[in-house]
Length: 465
Ligand code: PLP
Image: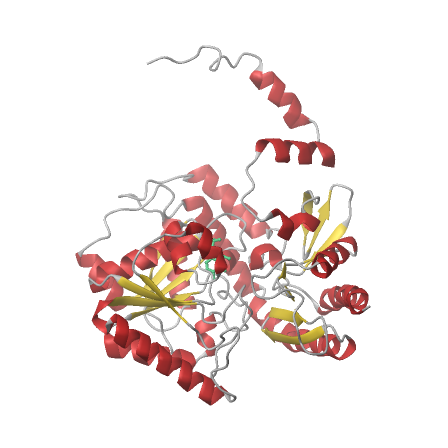
C-alpha cells in the first residue's frame, strides 16, 4: 500500500482556499473554473445561450446574474422552483432548527419526529389510501424505488412505460424513459417495454377525443396480450406528460388505464415528479381524472420547491401491506434525511398557509388568455397548450405548420436566436425542439405573468420576421 506523500501534502491548501472563499469571483473567473474543473453532461448546444449566466441570487420569480441583470424565470428552472427563488422564512427556520437538533439519522433503525409529521401531512394531501411514504433524494431514485417495489410486490418482471415520457437519469429511470434521452444509456435496465400514449408524433389515433382515447387504450390492451398480463408488474406514466409536450390525456384515458391494470393485477404507477403539488391546477396530475387512485406515486421537485434534494414514493395500503411482511431490505444513506424532510414539511405548510393552489387557479385563465393573444399575434405560433401553470407554445416556420426543429431533429439557428433573444430581454425558459415552455413559479402574480408575456411577444416579433 503506497500513497504518494506529495499527493497528500495539503500544506498551505487551507490558506489558499480560504482566500478564494473570501473573495467574490468575476463572471470570467467562474466560467474558467467551470470549464476546466467540472464535467459537462448536458448537450452544450442546447444550453449555449444560457451558459454564460452565473446565477448570483434569486428573489421571487426572478433571478439575477453577476452583472445585476434580472431574469424572470418562466420555467421554474427545471419546473421545480415552484415556490420561486426566495426561500420562505419558515423553511429557513425549520432547516436551521433541524441542523441544530438532528442533522442526520441512520434510516436503518432510527426514525425522526419530522419524518412522522411530514408523513401525516402527506397522507392528508393525497387522496384515497395513499398513506405510506418512502423518502429518497430525487425523482429518478423515486422511480427506481417504485420499479423495484412493483416487481417485489407482484413477483413479475416486466414494466410498461410510454415512449413519450421522461422518468429520470439513473439507469432504471432512463430505461423507463421513452424519449430519445434514453438512447445514450442503452442497453440499460431490462424488462421494460414501451408503448405509445394518446399522442404519437406522426400518426393519429383518430379525430375525436373519444376515438383517440379508445384506440390508444385498445392498443395498450394488445401490447399487454403480447407481453402477457401475468408477466407485467406495473405501468408507469406521467399523468400529464411534461417535458415531452404538456399533454393532458383525453377524457377517460387514465380511468381506462386504471381499469386495464385492475383486470390484470398490474400496478398503476403515476410519476408526479413534475405534475405534483399544484403544477397542473390540481394537487396531483392524476386528479385531473375521475376517481383514479394509482397504486404507487412518485414525487420530487414541488414537494419542497427544490430547495434541498428530495424525492418520495407513496403507496396504497395493499402495497404497503406487502412490504410490512417482506421489507425491501435495502435503502440508501440519504433515505429520509431529516434536514430535507424538515424543508418539505415547512414548504408544504407554507404552500397551504399562502394558498399556492388557489393562486394557480387564479393565474390559470390569465395564462390561457395570454397564450391565446400570443397565437393571434404571431404567425410563428402554431399552437399552445396549458393547464394550471403548465404550458408550452409550439412554433412553426411556415403556414404549412412545419416545425423549426423536428422531434429530436438537428438544431435550427432560429431557435438558438430565440433563446438568445429571451436571455437578452431578461426571460429564462426552456426552448426544446420547436417549442418553449411557460411554467413560472406557482407564486407568480398577474403583473409578473404579463411582464413575461411582453418579453415573449417581443421575441416572437423578431422570430416572425
Ligand atoms: N420524472 C419526471 C416526470 C421528470 O420530469 C423528472 C425530471 O425532470 C424526473 C422524473 C427525474 O427527476 P430528478 O431529476 O429529480 O431525478
